[in-house]
Amino acid sequence: MRFRYEILLCKHELVLYYVTIEDTYDVIKRAHIATSHGGRDRMIKETAKKYANISREALELFISYCEECQKKRKRPVTKGVVVQPILTDGFSSRGQVDLNDMQSMAQGSYKWIMVYQDHLTKFCVLRPLSSKRAAEVAHHLTDIFLLFGPPYILQ
Ligand SMILES: [Zn+2]
Image 1 (cartoon, rainbow, N blue to C red):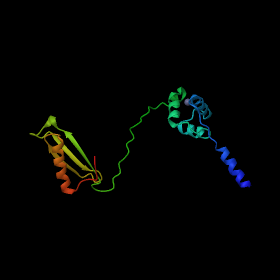
Image 2 (image 1 turned 90 degrees about the vertical axis):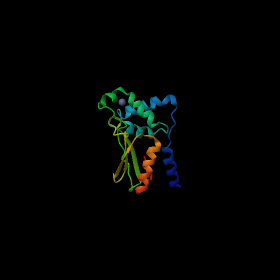
Image 3 (image 1 turned 30 degrees about the horizontal axis):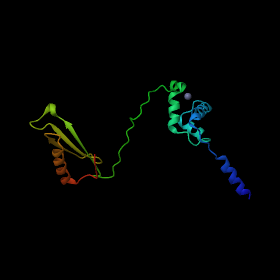
Image 4 (image 1 turned 135 degrees about the vertical axis):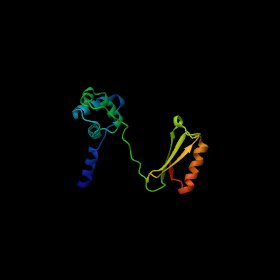
């Protein structure tokens, strides 16, 4: 019996409140002050103790408008420059095609250089093109694929 009671107590402590849209600002502000201008993750921890529906976006928005937090953060925000490396698991699993514009240095009728590169091995094949029409590109790609097989992914 005692055991069951404890479980109930435990559950009772886990009650979370849904905040109405009108109260959201005040709840976030209180949490922000309670964490002494805490960052997003600390705010998430703080609000998640009591509230069920304070979103990460709302917290980020609040912090982005807090003057004191913006003063503290001096370095410019450089978002979106993190390059995720693409992992490849074998030869011909990923091939990449690029067209280099050589129109200013045309050699006879050839104005483009097509570069096909295997992503893993960096093995590359160059082809001169007179145009960047799909038919011409496809013709050369087919030729390359007949030489050592098509890639699983072509980018
Ligand atoms: Zn702040």
